[in-house]
Image (cartoon, rainbow, N blue to C red; front, side):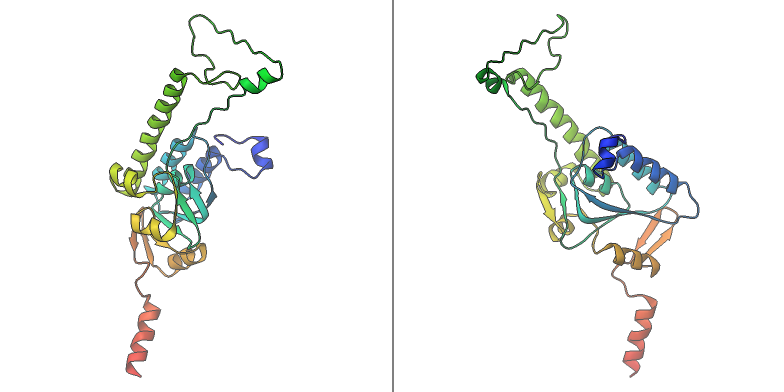
Length: 239
C-alpha cells in the first residue's frame, strides 16, 4: 500500500511510505555502514512504488543497500529490490513478475438476473467518469484506455529496472521472465540478481569483508577466499 492504513497494519502489510522513511533514516545515520532489506513480498499497488524505489536508489549513493529475497520479491517488490546496490536471493525463492495488471469485473448480467438495473448518470463534460465500473460492461474505449495505462506504467517499470541493474530495456523484456516468476538460478543467469545466498550468508560476507565497503561503493568479492581461508590453505600446503 502507498501509505500506512489500519487495515494494512492488521494484515501485516508494509507501506511504501514506511519503507521510504526507514531508508532515509538509516541512510542519514553515520553509524550505519550498510543497509539490508529483508524482502518477502508478492508485490503491491503501483501508487508509491516508483517513488519508493527512487528513495532506495538515492540511499545507495550514500551507502550500500543489499536486498535479500526470501522467499519472494515479485512485481513491485522486484522494482524495489532492483534499486539496491546488490541483490541476494535464496535458492528456493522466486522473483520477477515484471509487469502491470488491471482487472475489470462485469456484474451487470448478474444484477439483471436479480431484477436490478443500474443507471449511471455522468456530468456532460466528463463522459469517461468512472468508466470501467463493475455495474456496466467494459466498453472498447475504456479497455483501450486501461491497456494504454498498463503499458505506460510498464515502460516506467522496465526503464527503472534497466537503469538500476545496468542492462537494456530489451534485456529486461526478453530475459526477465516476461511477467512470470523466475527461480534463483534463472534470475542469476539473466542478471536479475547478483548472488544466490541467504540473510545469514550476506551478513557473514559483510563481516568477512567479502563485500568491501567504501562510501557508497562496493568491491564485490563474495566468492573470493577470506584471509583466514587463505592461511588455512597455506598451512595445508605446508603439511
